[in-house]
Length: 106
Image (cartoon, rainbow, N blue to C red; front, side, top):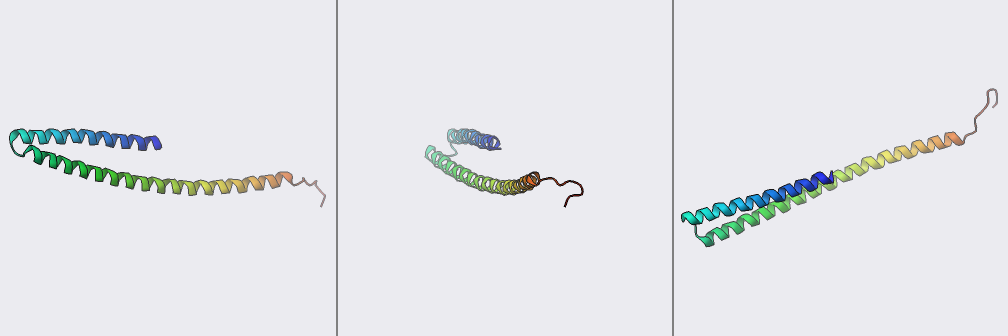
């Protein structure tokens, strides 16, 4: 499960790197075509990068909260199962320590 989360985050980081390259290429092309100035392109790139960072942080926060909720629920289930097993073990131990009775004996 943790490996899946790590891979997902790494894939997201890879996608962000590719997106950054694409944005830079597009802005460079706009500068070459004279649609924007180089300083405007830098401002746009900074805004896009900041928005990407905010969105990435939000996703990480949400994912972290969901992961904590998932593990808490998992822990509750595990604790419940563990308590049931402990009860069964106690019952079996009590059964094994009770001396057997013979037929006809009180």
